[in-house]
Amino acid sequence: MKRDYPLLFLLDVDNTLLDNDRIEQDLRDHLRLTFGAEACERYGSILEELRRELGYADFLGALQRYRVEHLHDPHILQMSSFLVDYPFVERLYPKALDVVTRLNAVWPVAILSDGDAVFQPRKVERSGLWAAVSGRVLIYIHKEQMLDDVERHYPAEHYVFVDDKLRLLTAVKQIWSDRVTTVFPRQGHYAHDPSVKMYPPADMTIERIGELFEYVMNTFES
Image (cartoon, helix red, strand yellow):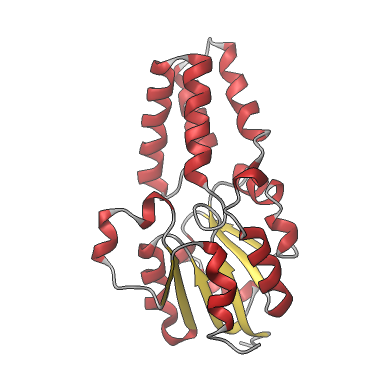
């Protein structure tokens, strides 16, 4: 395979560049205030069920399942407006967009995210990340199972994969081995879950995404 890039960055979105935990909390607060505590708790339970099934927070999928249980309540449709119109750009981590822009000026950068085919692309677009990576966006259900497809779209000699889930960093490292440098930003609930002790450390660990550019500039030559 011809490899077009000597080095390419693959950046996760949720809890890596974007504070997805805060988005989820805002949604729960909205549900509690608008529809009551019972609706909020039931939606939260469905969301956790889907998270276990898919490995990511499927906000719209959870809403669809919740709606099936309340087909005769027209107010439920207001939930979708909250999600679709959410100001995602306000939930970027500090310096996240600046880091992406600065990296992209030196090396090619692509978004590599898990998520659904409707809400996740909108999140990436409305947060400004889509434009920041010049449209290089890949979204899968289980991205660690799609590395051949990643290589097909963006063939590179070496990848830098940045993700808040140590489980995924480990899986990608096992497949790509020395062809990937894994970076673990210790942000969000996954990064601080006790289960991280089950996995070997990433090649690099940073406390926040805003540190990424300086960190990699000391590691890789342009």
